Image (cartoon, rainbow, N blue to C red; front, top):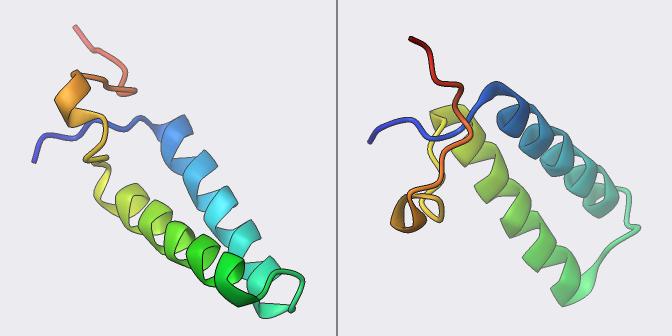
Length: 68
């Protein structure tokens, strides 16, 4: 897996994941919508930690800065 996520993309995803988790665990979002959003938050967090987004790959997208 070649990294395709830059630092800003990773930070934004982590912030969104934390925000969704807070909304879910405080009871602001619940039910089916809450579970779907929580699953999305987990996916955002995982992709941030590995610096790879599977949805970027088929389109050849990358938010990594090019050095050199």
